[in-house]
Amino acid sequence: MFSTLRFPSLFVCFLIFIAWMHYKKRKATKQQEKESKEFWQREEEANHTRKKDISHLPLFTPDSSRIPWEYTQNETIRHYLDKLRRCMDKPMMDLSEYTNTDLKLAYGIGNFQTLSEYDETYQTFIQNLSALANAYFEVGDLTRAREVSRLCIDYDPINRVAYLTLANTYKKEGNSHGLADLKQEIIQSPLPRKESLLREIDH
Image (cartoon, rainbow, N blue to C red):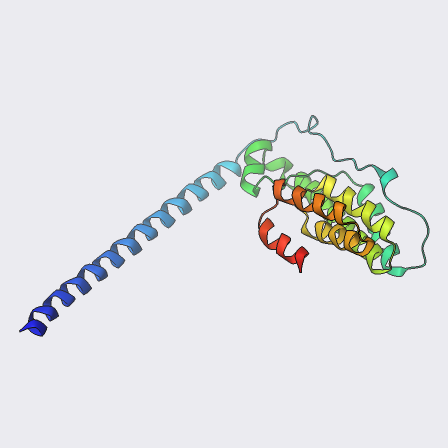
């Protein structure tokens, strides 16, 4: 009798579970549809936003005196220095906080291509700067590796590559105080997934 009574209870629980799953699926689908509709509405508005004045926007101007331009025979270092020179000949702007839609809404569709190029040049500059720091570390030039890593972090406080290079440089130099300060800096930084970076540094 016990098993006879138990079977309907389990069946009812199963039906309730199926109904709940169906409800959650429908709710998620409706939410996705709502978000998609809102996105395309904003995108449509953005694509019709008139061109606005962007002359007041501040361009990113790196301090060239903090980049070691001295001649070197290392091809990798020369490659990254050349990349940096090319970036610095162009206007740069950090627009990473904007989505494409946000950018068009803020400054107009007519400025989108120009601003996208400014941002792309900035991102290329930062990537090559962090790569340069790592290249100096690889050839054992710890002073320049430290200086360029620090410069990169000053410009881009969420650059994981620069943090790792600087941490490895401190380890190689035996600078435990510098490494401890860097870890504290990472904790207080806006860097995403900082816990995984700290674990990587420790290991």
